[in-house]
Image 1 (spheres, rainbow, N blue to C red):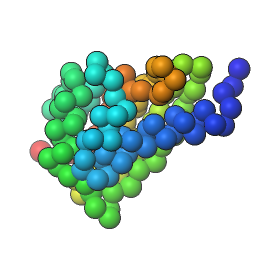
Image 2 (image 1 turned 30 degrees about the vertical axis):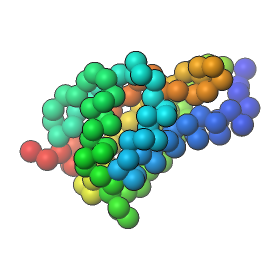
Image 3 (image 1 turned 135 degrees about the horizontal axis):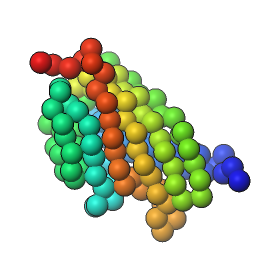
Length: 128
């Protein structure tokens, strides 16, 4: 059974915490979204990053925002009763990097929380 529009809006609002952190260079919003056990996998400038979200929080806090050049789009790709897959397209993070992020969210205690993040950096934005 398809979820109602309100549930899609709730998932989008949860993912917006991720976008807001990246846009502002402030990990505090993302810390509300991710569970303590959440993991991440992806490449940043050709180097594999994996493990806890602490590395992501550090990147967000140290790289900063993309300012006026940063843009993002949230797409809810899948939504079931307690599971959602969200794609976030980012352009201009830190003023130069474009990412495609895939967030896996679970509904825990009535709240959408991210348990995993995987990402791809667009090859034309990799700094060698």
